[in-house]
Length: 118
Image (cartoon, rainbow, N blue to C red; front, side):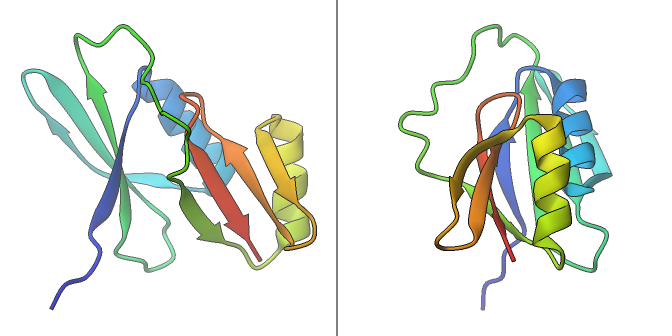
């Protein structure tokens, strides 16, 4: 038997990314691991989900990550898509909308996309 534990993304500016995920998706730090070469921060949604987002900051990394065609993304559901859309519009992070499907995507400071679902 398997169950999801977390997804990982590597970030260039840990504090900026943590601020983005808290403001955009209400994610909060659950735990942190300091390694000689990196810091790992696990963010949770505070709604009972065990699934976490792991942000990895590599101490020696200076160049942006190559995200390829950025076809891999996270997805979050919300009970109030209109309020979520307004929040993300004010933040200026909406990068793609599919009005026909009733969904949209936001982009984080490193260019990773997150799908927002009703």
